[in-house]
Amino acid sequence: NSFCTLLGVKVRMAEWKSASWKQEEDHSDETTAAIEKVNATTVPVLLLSSSEPLEAHLDVLLAIEKKARFGGDTLSTQRCAVEVVKIYRELGKYDDMMATVEVLMKKRGQMKQVQAAMLTTAAEALTTKDLNREAKMTLLQQLKHQSEGRIHVELEHARYTMELAQMLIDRQPGQTDEQHTGCKRQASDMLQQVQVETITNMPRLEKIESVLMQLQLALELEDVQRTQTLSRKMNPRALGKADTKQHKVRYWKLMATHFERQREFLVMARCWHEIFLTIPGPEDAPAAADGDDDGPSFGGTTRGEALSNAIVLALLAGHATAKEVEDVAECAAFSKQSLQTDRTAWLEALAGSRDVENECPSLHRILKQVIDVEMLRTALAPTIDDLAATHPLLGGHADRRDALHERLSEHDVMVAAKFYKRIRLTRLAQLVGLSDEATERFIMKLVSSKSIYAKVDRIDGVVVFERQANPIDVAKRWNERVDAMGTLIDRTCHLVAKERMLIAVAGSAGAA
Image (cartoon, rainbow, N blue to C red; front, side, top):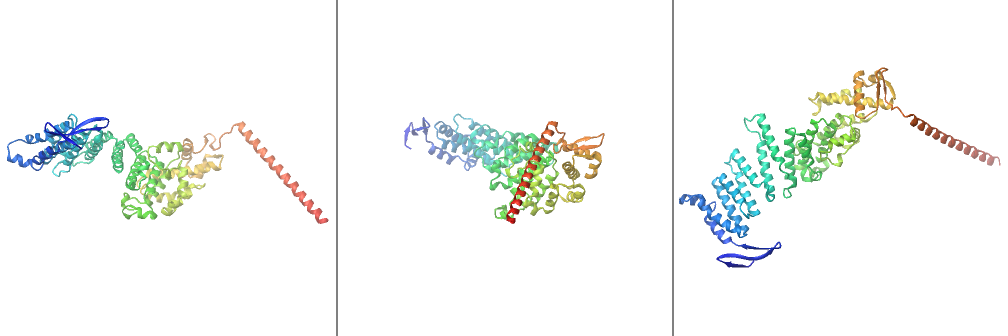
């Protein structure tokens, strides 16, 4: 670039930029000379050797910063502003530092690059070892305030907010449960204002980590609506990357906790199946993190444990329509590999899986029996009791053990509905091994979930599993069957006549 001298100031010749003429000055020599005299190293010496206050030394840099800013010299403006901030930081005057940053940020015509550089320099004070927690939180709050609403420093603003929120989440000695919960609520409200998914220059893994942090916080606060909103921010394609396996396992464990509180065991089983699909198997051992395919690199969860949890939860799940299951699962980033319509489809898919047979042979045998059309409660009761006593998801949960027995009873009622059109309630109770009242209760549950059709005649004590047909439909069906029977008779008569003709021809040929 060519320069000319105007009134003793080196001025760059006008250039055509962005359809406008802009004259820029060059104050680099003046800036270099000033910084050599006044910088973070020399200021402490100057303060000891002279009686002038600190502000008097800094006025030199601030004056050059003003001239460079009005002259459009971005580099010189940045060097002066950053040096002023650095001097305050090295002297430990953090309040004065942030006050100066605030003033310079609001200066007329201040460049975006200068604002970002000042915030970055000021944020380096957070790594100072002698900075206590209260001073660090105050500094973070000031940095967050200065970067708020400025799109060119939105990444820094998000990081300051997340660090401040993490400090609020960390429990302090002597803090009561109510105080800790209040700090968590404050951190959640703070993070809710930051939309990390719209920050284009934030690394992908950092975005995922931020969403997981907010998701865990919402779960701890039992904020269901916030949990569902955050879970929708997770992109299945982002979780499918090779470097996000740790984050993916953590995400599905958090979602399993969310669905557990809602007692949605079938969707919870799908979460554990996603974890099973994420953890590398023996054939993928070279790609496993830290060379260990089922070790602590995935939160201490092995493939066998994840698959076992998925099977047990599928057995625990109650009957629901495909639409109901889809409505519950729509808030999570499930993949198509774990898509099944309802509980029956899940059990059949697991029973036919080679992985289940290899990883969990005992549960595989239970699944084979459950999908068969036979009475199970009496035969499987001891096995279910042993499973409830040993499995981590069932031990200490008496309600889940009872739910497993209920699933067996419901299975037996559904089997009876397939083989009987009408049956006395006492006989049905005898078949499923329950009392009359319990059997009737299970029938009502299955009818309300639309798993079977049944009507109970309490006066006569009869259960009817066949729908009452429309007389017109009955007559139509009878007519179709009569037509089919007539067709079969005609076909049979034709074949008999044909056979007789063939025999007669064969007899005539033999006589000749």
